[in-house]
Image 1 (tube, one colour):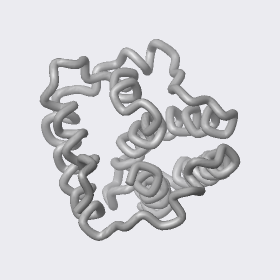
Image 2: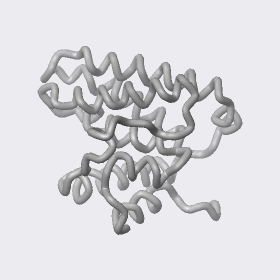
Image 3: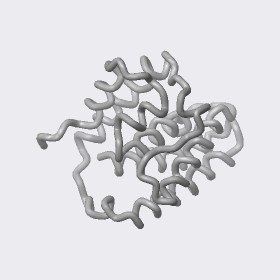
Image 4: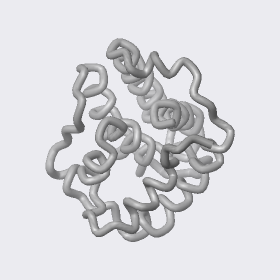
Length: 165
């Protein structure tokens, strides 16, 4: 095991802290990984094989805005105050994020850094931003209640996990 703290532990510590539980605070708490962490949490619901009835289109819109910022080379998150200051809600912080954290813990056990130097390259992060946009658009145009949004959204979640881990 490495001496670094696991990301799942950092996420749980953020949940237990007194920091505001908003999308903006999440991006600020995880600094350079803020894009990946925020996109991961936004796209986790569309990645579940559940019929969402189009409710996830708001999450997909925010994801596209964030991925576009990755493509443009921004280092910090920028969101309109309407999205940035919105509370995540009790159900998200008490049920969804701990559920996600348990899944991340599974990935942490089996993942090993490979080609980690690529993630330091600006061009590679921009390409990942483009891939995230394409996958998110694929999830957004899927017909509601069809389940076809699951695979592209799952691809986005896995890309974000690769950036984080």
